[in-house]
Length: 423
Image 1 (cartoon, rainbow, N blue to C red):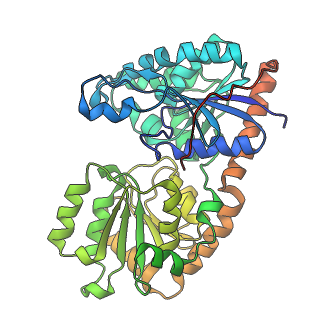
Image 2 (cartoon, helix red, strand yellow):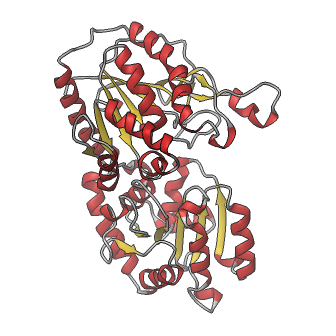
């Protein structure tokens, strides 16, 4: 496919303040650029009022930067803590990006817009992209835009439906998310299902013993890994309880490594103390995305007992790393994990079943390793970012064929944009 000029719009994108936000979007952008496409990003960030210390870090986000060579604009948008704007956030997003979209198109006439999340980004991108006469694609990622958000209120439901009906093409990260889209409204075109992916250079072929030595983990003890935001929706409290019941002898329990931060951390630490399993749980906190691969390589099994998901990127990463996965059959997870083959699926909130799955996968010599080998073989074909980029190209080809227009050549952006490096 010939080179396409793509304007990506996503409020989830790495920055100097938060290098782990939206890494899955950034990695997709990089994969498209590696295939010869010209991709630039508009990523609105919340306006930080002066004099308020808690928002000082957000004021440090540069208005214009490059991230791993990708030009990124960070316009400011008005938001309220705790998502108090409700569906009104789509209007503030549109106001933040519309001028930048018009100026960008004037100086660099892009072929299409690709937004991530149907709301607020897809809704705003549809209006902004159509204002300059280009088609707009959006990826629906799951809980935060399709599976949970429409249930918050009638206003939210109407807003998501508006986004679905205005976009020229919707990509869903799983069949479960695609069904959620179609249950709400009829898209202009059929929904294309393209999963998230993982970078083999960060996650494949990591030696377990080497990774454990580097992280200070025991060489001879099973290690279960959780990676994610510490919230109730991720089910991590159930995982802590399950670890507490896996064995009466503390030495026979797997070691649980928890990578991530979130509002539930203090409660989780209290629960660990109450159960007396401090020697079996390690809180690693936030870890740069490049370093997650070491944790993945060190573990025997990834555990993700979520109550809701779209298609978890962390499962893609675990499979590329050749690790077994214990998870719940929510969202697109069953489309990745085959129960009893590449891992185990247990009902959400079922702590005894989760403990049984940990015992079954980790208690049988060689079982976790065999499952991980099958997972890696399957992931190699479909779950790398390169494979994902190829599928996205086919969507762009179809969208542009329907559009029957080609933007003229434009001079590249100047070199006066500062560079930063993030995962």
